[in-house]
Image (cartoon, rainbow over the protein chains, first blue to last red):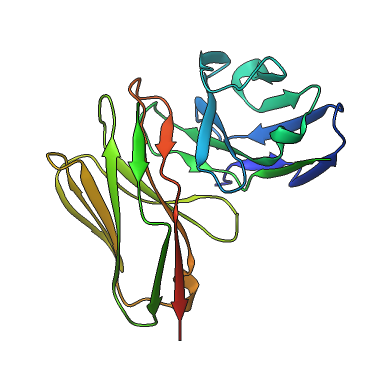
Length: 113
Length: 110
């Protein structure tokens, strides 16, 4: 069974540009999460989908971040416009039930210059 | 607020045993998870303790004491490949998102 996949693995953009990250969860997992790790800090929660609905987006830093999960399958996280402080590794995770084990993808390393 | 505290670094030699501690403060508690991360790759699930006591999975064991808000990950017969970052994590109050500690970097030398 395929694990959580993320695309791209790396992205380097300039401040003010737009970037879209994609996450494909494990097949059959209704719960999808986005997390971010900024250098030197802990992994922090961004938001949680149950199927196509946003269950909790309390961790989204500001309105420059937009997450979608159309059809309840893959999800995208768009940053527009990107700022320097958005640099970090963005992880996606999925789980079957809400408090079940979360399985993480390899992350997208975003660098904003 | 909710927070998890763990040591930033631990060093050990091959074949040794190492214990990584984690203390937590959470509003509502569902259990403690442990993840391993190599070189910034995908955090890999290791174990989960919902109840007090010891859970053993091969060379790795995890312990939880809810009354002490404390847990630990025990790694035995250390191998070079165990060099990685280890994170403890707990669900938030809503039970939907994981809150992570800052991670413990384990360095295993020969």
